[in-house]
Length: 446
Image 1: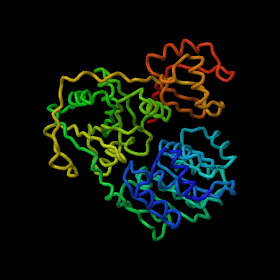
Image 2: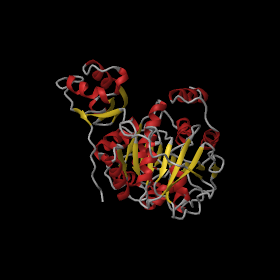
Image 3: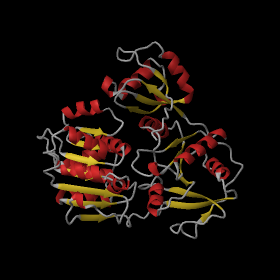
Image 4: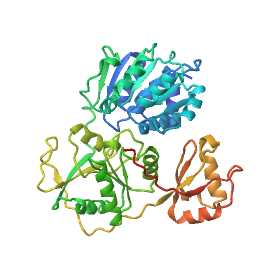
């Protein structure tokens, strides 16, 4: 297939009409140059910007790993994998990250993917085990390399690069400019595509909410009530505060979850699934959710705390007003506190009404299924089972996510009891699976 036709087919699969200016420039540069640094804000489409040229660089006749993508978090790894699968290329992809079954990964790598995505620690583990042949890896992508450096992955990244003897192309991506590239990357005279300044977002509104109280929970509560039940992300600077704010909002009748790096992978993944599928509309989080996560477009981002660095403020705001959409970022500030220097002096002050009703409860509830891809279950199997045996209407189903050994289905709240009652003794594809309302499994890792 010609390159143009291949790209058109991929864009059709992704339901995208046209590429933006950054993506067009990145495609041409990545294909034709050896060392590339792409700087572009969160939400501008960087993932597709490097995946499209990679498709064209892969060789169908090679049955080994040809491209390695190193990312700072498992969430970003899974997001990139999801985009690749939606592209429907002929090339296999696998992901590896801490908290994922090493045996599953070893089995996947026994039939090597063309594209391997992983976090620095787990990729280093596989390289030390010699889990896959590195001699055919010609392209290395370091996505959000600034975040990997910030998290202290220098040694692991250096080890990974040392294990790639035949690299021909290095692609570094960041949503932050002015990041020094370490010597171990061995990138010489890179072509830099800097879209940080060009993509100033005129669609983003900034509003200041002044709290009369130092404990700003009352102002936060009324602000959320003013959103007419639309979802929101609430950013805090500390893990403990995310939990406290979430508990206080729940106690006042706003169904809220929290997300931070002190939770184990399973707990983090489950809460994100509920947020994605509409079972949870309000998420209190640290900067861990500022980038690299597959979560819906937000109309509302709230800064309950302001970060110390302007770059993190920008990343947080990148969760709203993305691409061609508009959105608002709210700063909830005690009236006597001093603003950081990076906040404009002329912010619009929003007078929040205090007579608004509580937000509506979520439209969906998440249902857990104890089987996934490795059990030969797919979305079609689950939809068929829920419609035929569960006696649901198709309109009762929302987002379905099928993992390796488990699955999660968004079901409209009024239909959940009927579904569970109807399928209690039923089998799916000849096997009995546990189907129940998903519970949050919150474990601390620190």
